[in-house]
Length: 100
Image (cartoon, rainbow, N blue to C red):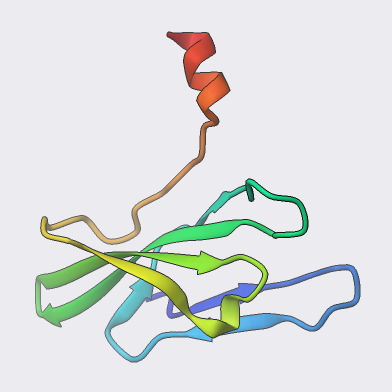
């Protein structure tokens, strides 16, 4: 399971990390750009918690992209069973409107 989210900054800032306890797993995080200058945006990821041999609980976590180590600013419970390792992607509203 992928139980560590690591942010590497190649501008000289130290890395930031957020670890999960055993039986928890991060899925692929998606970056959401900030709506105001000076903020680094948000990361949204699904976190799986294995509660039995084939039983899982899931939640969407929202993290401050500039302060990953602080943990989630919000957790949204997902009441349905998901497959582990959900892949995510971000499409802007403008791109969606252009394809409509």
